[in-house]
Length: 154
Image (cartoon, rainbow, N blue to C red; front, side, top):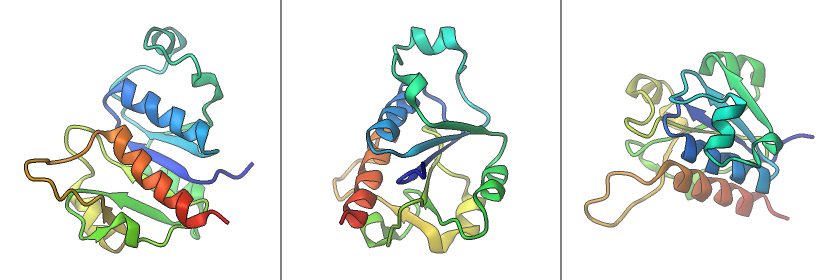
């Protein structure tokens, strides 16, 4: 089955955020991709201990690098990179089913060098409130994923 969307967590650090992204993937017929290194273990004992009793149902791939995923995805794959440094709002992106939504690690976001390379595909979730630097990773995944679903719903 082709996933509705591809959720990509680049160097995720917090298992509960990754678990929440997995739950979002299940509930939207999407696929979860994790790019190493991971800040936690995916062994069965650790997954069970963190309460991810649904983890076996997640359509999951783990990659050594973003380049490896991009090669596997093919030249026609479309990648969007979420960053607080982007200029274009996520609702101004024109999503299609199968798109890859790439989110950076919780503590620092995506590398600046990657964002410079991919500036045409970098998007931001606007945060008009004062004092906020960023949103929780799983919250950001949900916002962008559901905007993609809204745009592609018939």
